[in-house]
Length: 558
Image (cartoon, rainbow, N blue to C red; front, top):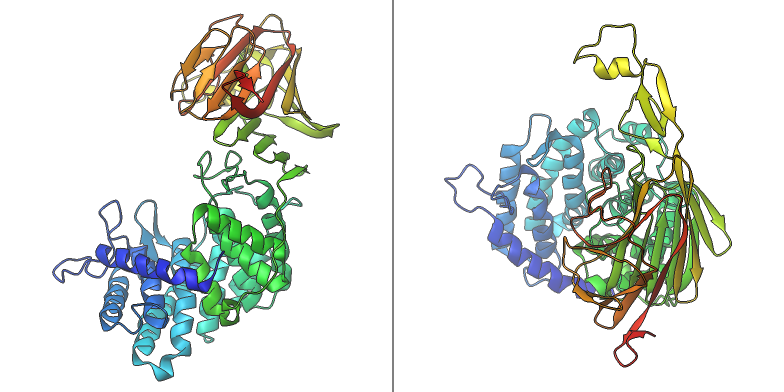
């Protein structure tokens, strides 16, 4: 269960680790900075001073009113003044320089702590120094953020959150016009609650947190509506072990196995604001599965009354089937079974049962460069969903080509420099597109995937690729194979059971009409253990996927 009391030991441990990273050699140019894993004191590492500040200010911490800690904070502030750009913004050495959005992340870390320091400054000289020294970095950084721009969708919201929080500390700053300019673009949450970046493991939490701060500070409760939609969606994207579907992400968390504890402060904040026992139960569950994160500490600093928590929790559902049509998502949970179907991905289906995970079911064929399945025309059918791959040729961007294309002569001079440009003006000889329809329905014990090819030219080599998370064993009627990363097995007939301990997923029936180990133009899966079922078009078949507990006594899933 998330609680203020549980966060204090985490804070003290964090401070202990941070102090080991700070450069205390006065002869070094990066004196006062914090060394990261890349052996550099990143200018934006000044944000680490937020944890030091909380520990100094909160009387429950063992570092409360520590003079050594206060001096370390002053060292960090001096480092910041030395390394900031003339704009007041900081660099992020791995990619961004003189960066307004990275300055926003930094100021958002500092702001709640500096506000607490301001609150007690009259009675604590150390707090007054913290408020003055770190507050100066914040105040000076605002003009650069107002003038600076963004890179990614979530940058807009972290930037306005930092402006709102800093403007609350320093009323002389004119921040509202910039905040309003970004808000006029509209919040990028669709009807399902999905943000543009679809970053279930990282940036959804950043957006939720940012909008919550702006809504509270500027009294704009309408900004909490997309947050609620995203929190509702996010729960339905979580597996039974608390990890979350990341295959849909457009950011660096794609494919990562992570318990999204970064979302906990969003669930808890809205849970306390709304008196929502469901959100609070999700918070507690995330903390049980992934641990308590310090991103929740500002909640209890901003709202001391929340340190007492008697809100009744609701029971979390673990059996549901939810369709999000705008996002092209279908999520099914039945206890340990957790399945995802998603349009627009080269991995349209995945299923997890306990520790056994079929991370992707992929389909591809060798028909020109059009064969890697990506679902379109997402629609609901009885018991499931249907998607269709239309056979677009994406490697020639100048036109929306469907199917196979051959180009004819053109009455122009063609050079290396204008080859691609001229190609779009050539006449074409076109071969009809090869479409693939995928219908996924829930059945007792698992799922049936109905796969059907339409159009094109027959026969064409075709494969179904089942990618398992490595570490288990694959058993067929005549063989047992270790599920090692990078290995590939062809399932000739019958079914195969992949088990991790007693958790098992079966697939089948098999077929091996060809032995193309890596089909041309198919997406590689080097991180997984691959089981291939191969055929030739026309295709009209069912892939049966079943989940359950492995019984050694019966030699099968039960």
